[in-house]
Length: 382
Ligand SMILES: NC(=O)c1ccc[n+]([C@@H]2O[C@H](COP(=O)([O-])OP(=O)(O)OC[C@H]3O[C@@H](n4cnc5c(N)ncnc54)[C@H](OP(=O)(O)O)[C@@H]3O)[C@@H](O)[C@H]2O)c1
Image (cartoon, rainbow, N blue to C red; front, side, top):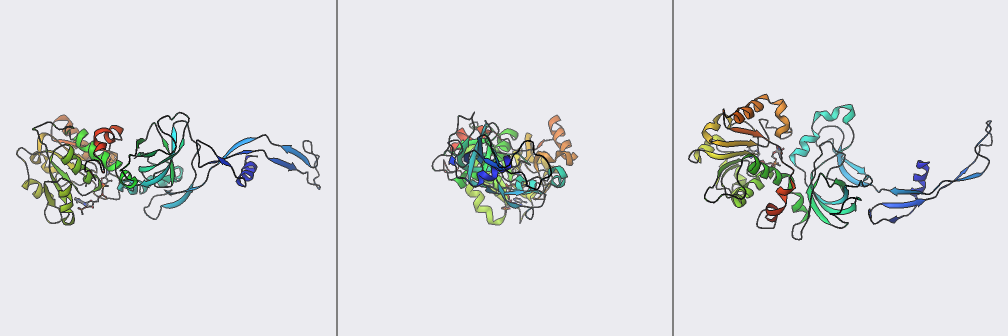
């Protein structure tokens, strides 16, 4: 019966509702004319020839199809599909948004490449992407903060989730996603390029490396940032220089030396011409750096942390010992690298310099308020 109703509905034109203007809603009263096959040998108890059954009215939503990038099994880029998706009915804490811009980060490729997606139960269609800017097109019953037409941007992460931000539409759980109003002057593309990298940079600098925000007057921190021209580095340099008032030594290739200087780096080590260790020692402050923020991965500096870092300072990496850009990094990889666990424990117990391999903290307060007011076109952060 529902299949029948569906096929009837497919041929109708409905009126959009207020809550979901993109969904066509129909009141369907289907009539089925049941005919007993004339040649049937069976007595028919319930039907009689040409009896008309009137099915009660049903309220039926026909959801249109949208496009999205998805994948089922591992392997970027060959496994990426350009699929038709439809939005699920709104649950009470959800909003639906029409995506205007989204970002593709290395972590998306790394997630697509995870071998676990070969497991039989995990071959369902999965969405791609965490950062978004868009317009609210549907609002759940318990959501009072947002209304249809609001321009928003933010961050949502659910590895293996059915919906990602790289598509035309997506549902967002307002109790879990970071959703912020997009003010005039902040373009959708600028907003969508920001959350994941900004949150990672801020988490590394302020939460793990313990650089005070706002900075303490007269106590300038001197830090080494490995990978100043990476997506995360672009924000790490700006936050460290413009907000936290740090003196920054960073690494970049020749082509990006002027670029990282324009973001706030004081000294640049061109890692394509000099060893990073040699460069780090050249610019070593008295007593050592206040933090090393590693946005590239690898182990080159690890044997020298007692020389490079002050006793209370930390080496914070968002990648870890691995260097392949196609493989997942961050705190997820601790179980596969026991030496990273030992390093972290040794640092925690005070036997060596502190060492953290981290994941970003998806905290709304990192993006709103003061830091946000300095983002994009507000005060010079790009
Ligand atoms: N743990 C977390 O929560 C978290 C969050 C975000 C990202 N990540 C990880 O962090 C890494 C960086 O991400 P991203 O988006 O910032 O990367 P990205 O923007 O894709 O980084 C590419 C840039 O890295 C630079 N680079 C490459 N090798 C380098 C080296 N040996 N030293 C210095 N710079 C080098 C290159 O610039 P040059 O030509 O100037 O060298 C290149 O333009 C990825 O592995 C990502 O998965 C982790």
